[in-house]
Image 1 (tube, helix red, strand yellow):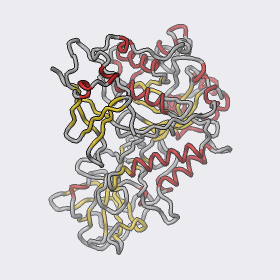
Image 2: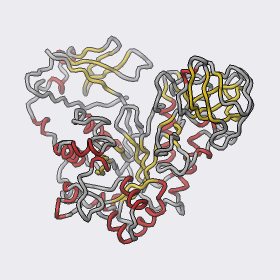
Image 3: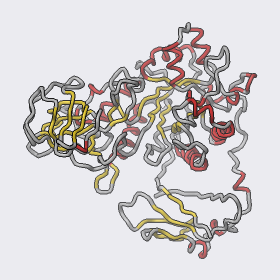
Image 4: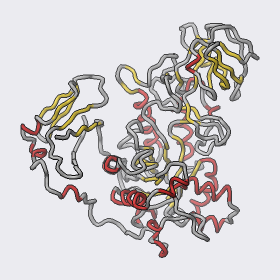
Amino acid sequence: MKRSSILIFLISFVLILNAINPTEQLEINKAGYPKSFMFWQHVRDFINNLSLSEQQLDNELMKLNGICSPSNIWMKIVDFKRRHPEKFTYLFIQGSVVAEAPCRYDPFTRSDFYDGHWVYFEGSKITSDINATQTIIPVTIPSLYKTNDDIALCEIGTDNKPNWNICEQVKCTEVNTTNSTIKVIRAKYNTSAKTFLANKVWAASYAYWDWGYPGTGAISWTINFSTTCPKDKQNKPNVDILYDKITAYFAPGGELENFDGLDFDLCYSTPTSANTNIRGFDTNGDGLVDGGSFNGKNEFGIGLYNFHKRLRTAISPNKLLMGDSANKNHQRSFTILNGSESEWWPKFEDMDLTYYSSGVNLRNLWKTNGYLPTFSYFVHKVGGDSRTVGLAIPFNIHRLVFAAAQFTVNALSVHPTSMPRPVSGNLYPIWDEMVKGIENKRNWLGNPTTPTVYLAQQQPDLLNSEGKTIAENFLQKFQGDGQCNFTKITNGIAISSNSSVANVIRFTINDIPCNGQDLFLSFDMYGT
């Protein structure tokens, strides 16, 4: 007898109905399938690395239904959009970090923000006086720091908490755990070197990702979306500044008023960073680890959701707003964003599509619960950032991903590492499946005539409808981890936890017939 263990995440949904959106008149939304567009790496390479005339550039960018624009070259993309308003054109920025300009992702710089506006790792005190030229800094817990960390040296206030108004930014070049010291470069990022007193300074590393500065060793800092984020002297948290800047770009008369939308790549509902190791996150700026949650509530995720909600209200409903969504800690702004991006579908590092059904379910979840009109897309990236690995992937894997994009009604783009080999005379190497091969015809599949049909659901039900009628013996098949309650209700089984702070529920369903090679389970689930 086999036991199937299933992990369920419960989320509440509210469906919002909207009037017909002009974005539905874009070529990508009305010409049929496959819906296809160029990802930002190709657009960047065409503009930055090739000497193309305006006509040659247009010829390349018009091969598919639209383009994804990186932020640092958007002005040339704005010109293209004016010439070709029917082409889907959107801005691609990082949804979890801000870098220093000129960053390929972000249209703003960190100097616009306040030292307390970021997520920090757990820090420790400086244990002796330091002057403005000293580069060897004694600290209480040297293991909390890593080489290449950006660190805030922040004066401790009378309340024994960091005073983010008095800070110096430094970069760590060496950690000496034997002597309990770190070696740093002083006065980074337009701050001035200061004199600090022993035990009166908090040294905390910025939570970060290694994006935005290829080959430079510089890093991007994690945005603090928490409702508890410290506020600057103008009483603004981080999200207020982001909100002001983004809405200005898309407002009438703004630089991006003609763009069709905005995507927040790698957008997380919990504090997330590279090189966390043993370091916890501080989101309310008090120097202590909180992980973004207080009294069992994910204030970081709530803050991100509220930020997206404010943007949706401020930016025209005619704009498409999207966010990365593949992992359980990605954004959950259902009914607010139109849809989501999935880079390396169905899941990061899934080389053989083990999570195929999970990926389909998530795409369908967005199709049902996105802000109308819904719009989601795949970035085909099997093999990650390795061109060699991408070329070695079997063609059936590529085509299964392409197929999934069609029957989940998603648009499709392709990362450079997963492109077919270039064809002579074709600067943008396009998969045959995207343009009907040598016929070079976009949207050649046309539009679906019926909803997607899942053939496995048409096979004989091994439970003999017990799962639909919820017979008593079927209810007995459910077993939890000691904290689960199972109750028969009118339209199914209510599964709840005895714990008021639980964020997952794990249970098993026993005595399921498993005589064949494959087992297919179909659930209708909702959360309250």
